[in-house]
Image (cartoon, rainbow, N blue to C red):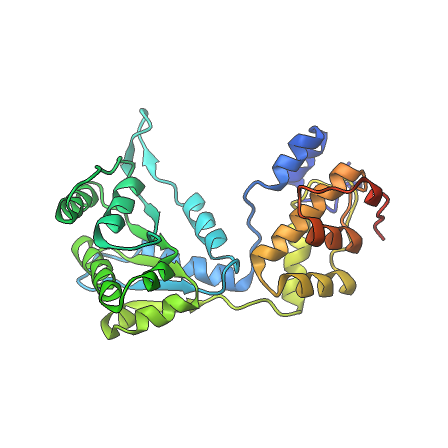
Length: 301
């Protein structure tokens, strides 16, 4: 068995015994494939998590194009640093709190997100100052070691004054709790934060660039393929597939993994049991909800 399934990670072998629907469901479970820039981002977040409290806590802005893999990195970090709970499943030590910047940001909506991220239902129709006091009280009661704020480019939905006010709130929260903050956003978030010199100096930018055709990209694709429960090996390292993935994904990590996952679903449902260039094309054209039976003869090399 080890020889016939050597194209798969050993942890995936057991999933081949499941039904088609079970295997397809497994395809869409969270996965992590290490790569240099992602590992560097995780290492910086680890440094922030373990940073001793100080009057000026360092923070980080993880930025890049949409679908470049920011959320994948953060989800990996949160999985690796779960909160510590007691026997009643109550949080005793909170490692991280993860929230999103509201789509139409303002102080009370930001604190409502913080309150909800701490596992408390935010009150309805409360004044902004009340929400701030409640949010800070809950943060002080059980302070996280690290706050993660996604979609921080939503700041740009507000006026310049509102942007400045919310950025000052982030700085205040970091100072008040002596807690580092990791903000995630598109490159537009970098421009928003650079409008305030104090914020710009506090949030060190960390860019996630698009992939380019390289040995590391090939290794990433092949390693991701080893996590897909297919019975046959797929020629994912071949130049034609690497170039096709680059062309169809524009070098975006999330798009690469989506194409491979959708192509793997097509391979399972069609019986091909391996990913071919043709199935990648079909995944790009049809997505995961329109599986054409006539394409079931697609073969791997």
